[in-house]
Image (cartoon, rainbow, N blue to C red; front, side):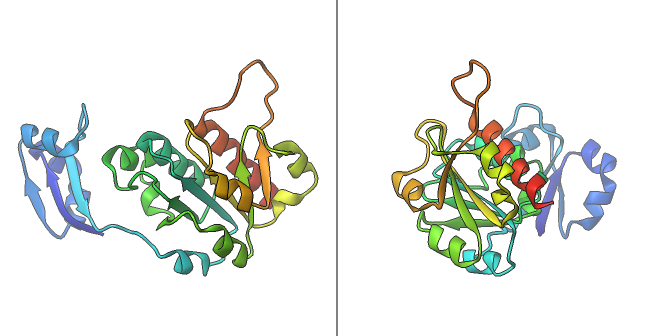
Length: 215
């Protein structure tokens, strides 16, 4: 929910429909909007909104069929892109677990491109696998050294089941306790000469493969 909308005169004229929806509108200068926006080329509008965190139990009570867990992902651009990708793939919940970046970090919000408001966003400790499994989700951990191949799981029909994907940081991967707790450790097959995929690409491949299987 928007609490207050700040905007330049030109932006408020251009987006008058948005201004009408805000409970409070504050016209500001170009200099002020540049300071508020924390970006090189601001669009002229900045909104102060309520945070939309949802408790883990409440989110899982809705029985989502696809969940993404960003475990200790500290890069806001990567985290926001995972959130956006999860939303696009039809995930109902995105969990920021452990020492993950704040989902309301400005760069993370921009990278999510609005998806922050489309899915249930949960902040949690790393101890999430038990609750995920209790909610009927199989828990799949992504790792380049995984014993299971993503394509094989798809061919075997295993990805049609409700699934929670665990994604770790590019630098360190998933914490050992999550790798051990997961039902399976899954690798994305590499057919060319590349050593690996980056986090956002790997998340997109895994989430869309699940989405395809579930449909």
